[in-house]
Length: 502
Ligand SMILES: *[C@@H]1O[C@H](CO)[C@@H](O)[C@H](O)[C@H]1NC(C)=O
Ligand SMILES: *[C@@H]1O[C@H](CO)[C@@H](O)[C@H](O)[C@H]1NC(C)=O
Image (cartoon, rainbow, N blue to C red; front, top):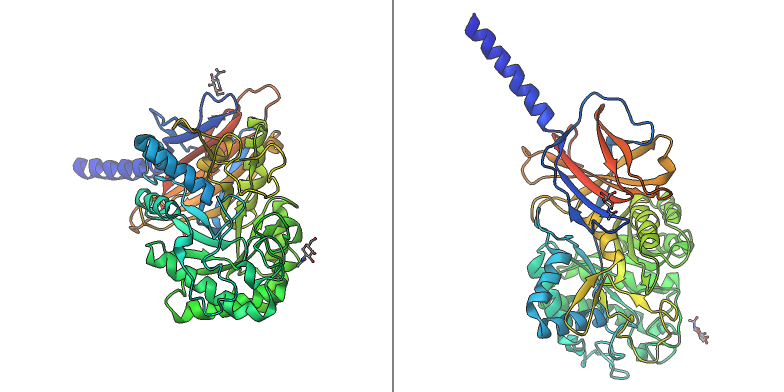
């Protein structure tokens, strides 16, 4: 009798301990307004445990773990020729500093002091951040593409990409041209104009050969686009206007070639331009060529993230990407953190984007190097990279980095090469709810017996007096209290799944 009582007590206790232990916060990463914490791991020495407790009257974040939304695939920026050149020069000058930087940006290792960025856009040919204007075939009238050669791109683009892949085996690469070859266009140059109608099929072949070329260099394309910024016609830099019908026709041909040649898994993503036309070109593209395009990508330079909803309303099953926003040299650090988190990154993801990227991964302190003769991007001040690489072999992470790192850390696969994250529903109650922007995510596991990672990214904008706000996080009817400093906090806990993996 006594023994069985003890046994029952033991069993009850151990079940209780396991349930409680499954909902504890140990991992906390923070970037604070006063910059005492810059993407800093503040791992707890004692756990915070979810218990029966009242909700904070200031802010209570209610995680809706049954409301499972879109996959969250990755965060990052573009490896332009200019970015690759700076990375390469750093490698030559100071290899240790180079590898430290690549690890800090891309390593997906759980406890590493690293952001685990895992989505990169790579221009096909020159962009306005290149040493010269070129495509893979600049021989006038070469309609058999005899002169097609991937090695017109500087070799450092491929070697840096290969190095990045060696740091993060989960890196996803999205290939995007800034212009077709000039001889295929009405303008006769890469600058502005549009694709000639007689070259629609040829241009699809050109893009297909570029996909094969990347594959041959060990870089499998996760996604490809027909054109960057289809509405941009700038006579000083590589750009091209694509009508809905021309983009659709090229996409159809290209997708056909991809399907028949082992590239069916590569996604075709259209539009790649600003939010303000979300209900026009992107919607019309799906109406005319929805069989070929998997989704569309947006940029930040006009409109707002909520306009992604007008596309989604028309095509709820198509994918949404957010692929470009640049910081500007000399702007205010904290204003940028607030804007990048609230309006750009959490903003686009909360409106169903699967990825969120800034523009150049690296530039120097003046927003160079840039293509000669091209109009200044980002106004006279110049663009700012995710990191700044200086000519003396030093580098510095910018506000773009901290904004990306804070969300990347909480959403990268918990198991290397394992399953990814999904966005969860989350709402905020309390008197200070307007001062917060928040995202909640679940990350699945390779082994079905492993607990899922539930993470929260919280931007506290209550910067009037700069005091931290004591808020509560609510999960499955239990709550935990946490003091959120002004800035960004990413934290997570583990719990058993109560639903099937979508
Ligand atoms: C691009 O701009 C140029 C110069 O303003 C103009 O002549 C041309 O018609 C435009 N092309 C397209 C396709 O809009
Ligand atoms: C910066 O903010 C953090 C979080 O509120 C605080 O702990 C730290 O003491 C502050 N540092 C300075 C130098 O004010």
